[in-house]
Image (tube, rainbow, N blue to C red):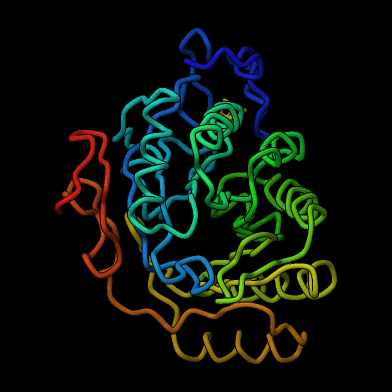
Length: 313
Ligand code: SF4
């Protein structure tokens, strides 16, 4: 377990639970001060500049300070599938991802473990890790934690779920999400503009991800307007259409809604970024009980919590 003091009375995210995670207590994120991982592997389903040619070196971290009712990663965000790793094992995983061709180290849901990840990544860099590090977060994080992470992070990949307080409360159960996320994202944007290499693969900067929710189009319009006013020219936007009602009633996005969003991108003059094709069906949903939680063309697993390194899946 890391000895970092911030876990002693945890305020690492805006929930500010003030629990002592060093003594094994858990706040809303569900995790003590021990870093637990679920899987690590090459992921080919991220935006093209993140996937690159070799895949994104994705490390799934157990726990999350959000409780989105439709979370596609619920088995690890709140199901607890995972195990603790120390600094040496974390470094081995990072180096193995690099050896297998990863373009970056992509930390999925890292915010509640920020101090440990910074400590371990500094060690990994000393051990030879050269890849850029991506912070793939919910956006619900304090500016202090973002500044802690900045010591090791190159690429910021936060969600921006909504800026509407009513939706934040009704759907995500966190009314403070809009102000916290806006402030975190502006802090991230302040670290510098997007940089890509000569192949177009992202090396630094901020890409904001927004999942369009069916039937909540005003929320998406509000996001686009805010992005145009605050981040255009300083960040990329990635619009995701893959919403699938996992464990809740509902439907996927329809063609009319999709076309409406494309029209708004034109209206607000946003052209730096990506729009996912309209998704239907659920074949792409992960199942972390399978040896490879994703389809084999989307990912190649190198490490699992229950088996360790599994190079030949
Ligand atoms: S990181 Fe976890 S324990 Fe700490 S404030 Fe956030 S939800 Fe609470």
